[in-house]
Length: 233
Image (cartoon, rainbow, N blue to C red; front, side):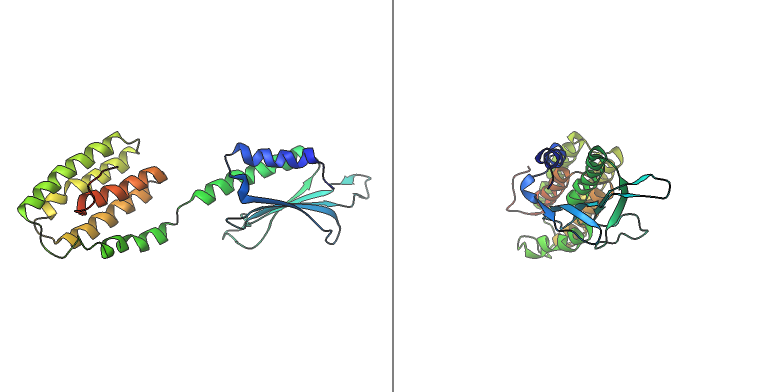
């Protein structure tokens, strides 16, 4: 069995990185091959795991003790192509402190990976908002609607300026928004909405904006084009 104090160090390593500990399971695993015992920490939302195996201690021909613990984790990140279902092996661990440090490295990667937005899915799903919104039609904008767009564009630009965005990202987004009133004179509502939304979202993803900023981009697009959406959050 593993000491409670040892397992608690693993718990604290994940807790210190801000993980929801309900997302993890920790189980002792039965012996496999030369293993005496094992321990497996699984991140349930992704299925990725960190596993350690304690082996029978051996001595080589030079009377040196062969390291008796190996660490494994998924996915295998040492390949040129990420092998989602294969283990990455960290061999030759001699003490628990090293185990905890390797675990922390894995947890840091896991945290970043779990928070990574699926850009392809987001882009595929993006047009569905406009397709489902009956307020955005293929009709041309009226003069009154163009005037309203001009007012909202100004408000959105001012709001973008207050966000802590990379300068290039803020400039690119504001440039797209700035051209909306002119394009509204020759494009239908749906045509313009589709173009603006896809362009702005691509710029947002390109510069790796935070989830909070991505949500603002989404709300800003709705604010510009949806008659029933009157609150800029």
